[in-house]
Image (cartoon, rainbow, N blue to C red; front, side, top):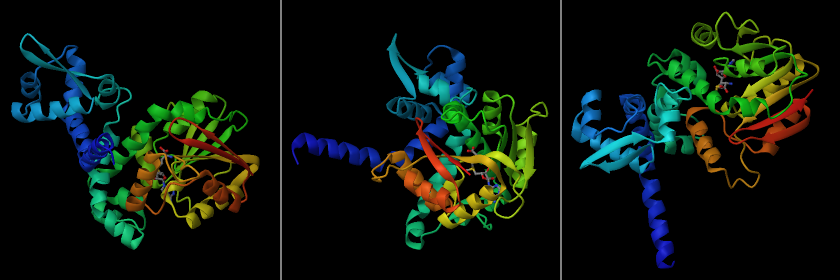
Length: 346
Ligand SMILES: C[S@@+](CC[C@H](N)C(=O)[O-])C[C@H]1O[C@@H](n2cnc3c(N)ncnc32)[C@H](O)[C@@H]1O
């Protein structure tokens, strides 16, 4: 290895070795209110002022702010013998809690639960199964049962994390295909109703039924979907055993990656049976390249799935195989910036 190659390799080694700190730094600064304060102040502030306003030690705050500068969440300038910190666009857009596109719950979920889950990665690899009970501190019949019964506020954080991604990708996912000929929709595992709202805003003559577990439906009704959203209805149930509402289109966003191949085929077969003739299923997932070389975010996410769920991320051919096994055909795939949309017909 030449000297520059060696230096590059050492830099990568160092960055990756300490990368586990990044979500902690990102979340801590967000949670303490650093990004909101700097967004509201409209002018850069010193670390002493930030510490004073947020009630922390100036010494600790300066360390945190400098790390945020290195990670490009903050910018720093020297002016009249003072060091002044201000938000970057990334912080204003996504890290401030009060931002419209805030990823606060998603950061919290990563910083607390995914971070904790990674302590058990070796156990998951050895045993080939999730460690949800150790991570969430409660066992359940599956990871969602544990999540809903946990008393650590996990369900609220999880729902918030799911919801926030729709502010980033909702529109491009739901416009990947023209879905105007599917007026009766069932969003299977529809969680907070973010996808349902996006669908209705694109196709105003449609109605969407959200099928989800009773505990999630209760929270969605209380906190996310208002009684003014007349075109959205709820159906409480377990999609593996309770009746599936009839629809032209079933939407499954980020659901199949939670489950084993057997359970995916079981669920898809139930949807195929309930689907109206000429209808279909729209699956949205982060799809792994056929050569399995990337994208790296997909490979990392698959490790999260190993530790926290029964599932994994899959290639397009693997999704095609699951859909075909359940009886779906005419399978088409469209890439978007982050997730892929796969439409299949009955
Ligand atoms: C990873 S989340 C995806 C949520 C949503 N589709 C999205 O993309 O924002 C999976 C969803 O499936 C729901 N779910 C899990 N198991 C279920 C079951 N057996 N029956 C019904 N819903 C279930 C969860 O409650 C959760 O809302």
